[in-house]
Image (cartoon, rainbow, N blue to C red):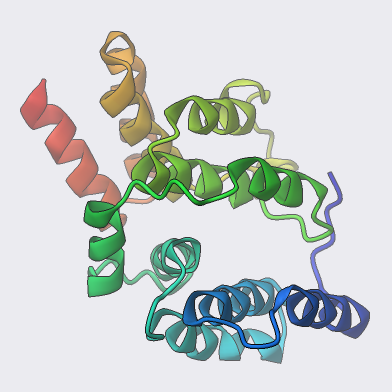
Length: 215
């Protein structure tokens, strides 16, 4: 994987060209929401003054007439990992209860994440969580979670910055708890490790509490 930590202007031009190319002549609200969401995700990874516009573009995207489910989930993930804002918001609760979304091209999304020039250790876990919670495509979600966590070596101090976040680890624990009861001890261990690393993760605490209550 490429590990570019900054994003230059040429990359931004390429992203914008791609977004405009994918839009129809008269795009429907979901297409517009998707395009705005993709640009918001790009801005969140720029690591410069452009990143301050991320939340503005996400809000434009999710407050459209028919918000894109992937964009809503991406905003949820951004709020939790970057803004440390764990309050629920209505659009995300709606997509979690209204779906599964059978129209989402999961294979294309996976290919795009793996081929992206923007390195993000949370990209695969984020997509895996979307496939699990919104699309109910647990087999694909398992593949991505396994690739992100189980197949990597224990992180060293030098490589820790390239490991998925503690929030992502808690979501992996949540996935194991919901899909494979035989791995409950592994799920509990992951929950405990992630919350020890990030005790402020309210979303993880709620998932862990539900896990303990069902045990």
